Image: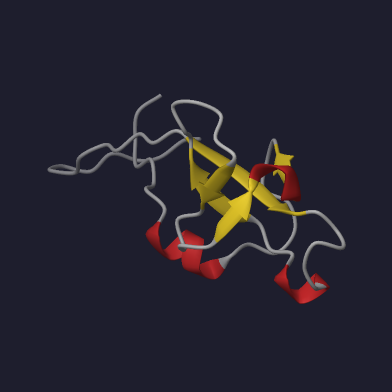
Length: 84
């Protein structure tokens, strides 16, 4: 993930995870890719940046962005703005 550094700009690094509900757990229009802060331990429930809560077993965990993103998650997820 590259970025350009600008004078006076701070770099924020956040560890995130991405997941979307498994088919059949929600309607197809709700199967969007949510962004989650990486938890310190494996919880039974997780809350996405948009505020939506899920049981961890109801999510397909993704290694990279796939499918339609949750626009509410994208609006508030911390972005990495520079560095290696």
